[in-house]
Image 1 (cartoon, rainbow, N blue to C red):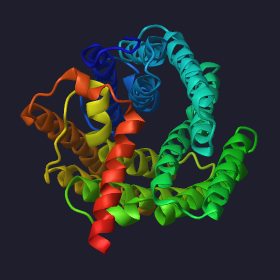
Image 2 (cartoon, helix red, strand yellow; image 1 turned 30 degrees about the vertical axis):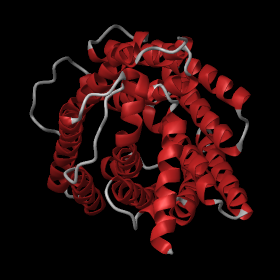
Image 3 (cartoon, rainbow, N blue to C red; image 1 turned 180 degrees about the vertical axis):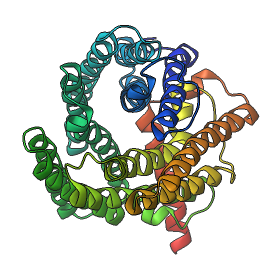
Length: 387
């Protein structure tokens, strides 16, 4: 069998989760909470650990499952090892080198995906992976994170937007929608590119692209229909639509505060997209993607709404604190953000532990085949309800 068995993927998933926990600890240090630093300088690694150590490894693992070839797992292995180097303070630039190499390996996986199917959604996701590689390369060569973080944002926004574009095929949106999507993505990527030379103007253009992508997703995503279903489809839709709202907020903040390095505006610009948008997407997709990656079922539980609601409330407190300059709201909102992600891990873990056992062979269907099958079933139920 060319692919890894689900149980063989667990070490890579464990590296991603360990990176998340370390990133959360580093984040609390950056917020000013008095906790042990574990090692000097860990707080500086918060961004790289969260974006590249956790999210990069997780996305690399999901792509490797989709490619279904053992060499594709090189990407998440390298980024996971790079995260470990950052966590344990291995002398620089070991961590950055490993993470950059991992992002280059992910481009190899997308080359395979493009060879199988060249479409707007696969091109969009490939551009997202390329943006991650560019951002990591800039970071490796000493460019300050505030000056290159828009490349990391492009990695996540384009990857997620591309995945959602793929699933819109199930509802057959008008042809014009694809043109509008392409224009929004081009504006966003052009702004990100320009920000490497003219930070503030480039970020404003990127902000306009983010707003356009948020509006497109809110208008054309299947979530607008599946929100009327019950159970897991409604939960996924609610999480998605909340995430699109945060994406729109982040675009507006980029337009208003572009280029600002002040603590509060910078925090608002970054966490509205990296936390509000990206983690809403993770919450939505976890019950579908996790089983395909690990071979462990994640049955839907109404308790999943707890971490979704807590995410929105805690982030709202934090962003409002940023906008009014309240250190207390900024710190407590950030602390509750950490609690939210721990609740998410606990909720997901409990669902896995309480699920009936299934054979590994049940989970060899590629990730996108599984998500599309679920979407077709949801569409059929929606049609039946509409008649």
